[in-house]
Length: 429
Image (spheres, rainbow, N blue to C red):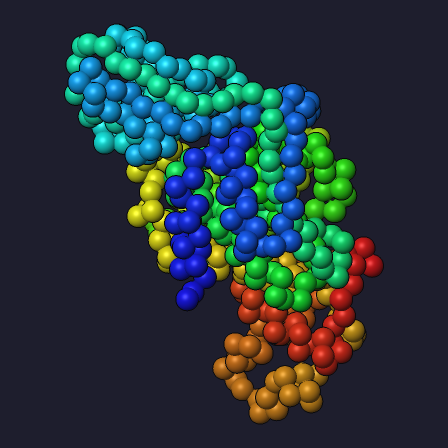
C-alpha cells in the first residue's frame, strides 16, 4: 500500500471526531496519531494561562445537540454531522419561536447545499449551522433547541516529537489539529506530518526534526511560549502543513522574510517537480505561519499546499469531505516534502580543491575522446557545478545558477567528493 493510500486511511479514521481548540476531541485524535508515532509526547496547558498576548480559554466538550420541530422531527442533528453546531457553543435546553431560532442559525446562501463551519471561541453564544436549502424549509412555530456541552476550566492539548539527527539544527514540521469533520483543511496536514515523521525515523538524518501538532493559532502561540528560545536558536527551516490532500493544483505561501532557506527549497522543488503552481504573497497568510513568522519570532516557515485554504469552494464547509482528498493528491504532497527534505539534507557549501579546472578524464568523469559538438549532459552539469564551487554558494544556489534540479546534482556532488575534487565548507571559510 502506497503512502498516499495509508495517509487516506488515517484521515478516514480521524474524520468522525468532533475537534475544537481544546477538549477531548483533540486528545482522542492525538491518541490515534500516537499509535503511529509511539514517541509522540502530549502536553496540557491549563485554561487561563497567559501566552504572549493571548489567554488559553476554558475547555469545551460537546456530547449531543439538535433542533426539534413541534412534530418531533429533528431538523438539525449534531450526530449526523458535527459541523451542525457552532463550535464552542454554550449549553442550551429550551423551546424558542422560529424568529429566535433564526437569529442563531448560520448558512451560506451562495452554497445552498453546504453546512458551514463556524466558531465562537472567545465570546459565549450558542448556534447551529445548516444548509441554506434546509433552512428555507423551516416554517414558523416553536422549536426545541438542545446543546449538551460543557465550557469550564480545563486545558489545551498539543503534541510534539523530536527526531534527533547528527546536528542539533532543526527543521520544523508543524500542523494543526482542531477542526471538526473536514478532510482537506483539517486532516490532510496531520496525516502528512505523521507519515513524514515515520519516513524520517527510518533514514539517516543530518538535521534534527521537530514535528508539532497544535490547535491552530492559540496552540501555536502556546507552543512558542514554551519553546521559542530553543526554536529561535536551532530552527533553520520550517514547513506548515495544511490543505495538502486534493488533486487540483499546488500552491506556495512564503515566509514573511521571503528568502529563507525554506522559501528557496520550496520554490526550487515546485519549479522543477510540477508543471505549474500558484504562488501567493505572505499577505495571503491564514494559518500558523502567522505565528511562526511574526515579528520577534521570525522563524523561516512556509507552506506547500495543494489548493490553498480559502481558495477552494469546499473550504470550511461540509463539502470538504473524504471525497475531496485523494490518494494521488496526498501522495504528491508527500513527495514534494520528501524532496525538499532530501535537498536540505544535502545542501552544503562546496569549495574546489584544485587550482584551475581539474582534469576530469583521468578520473573517468569525462571522455578522453574529443567531441566537437559539446559535452554529454552529465559532464556539462558536472563541469558547471565545479565552476561555482568557490564556497560562496550552497547546493541550492549552484543549482539555481546553472539551471539544474538539485536532486540531479546530489549524485554529482557525491562523486566529486569521493574523487577529492571538492570539500564541504562553512560559507564563511
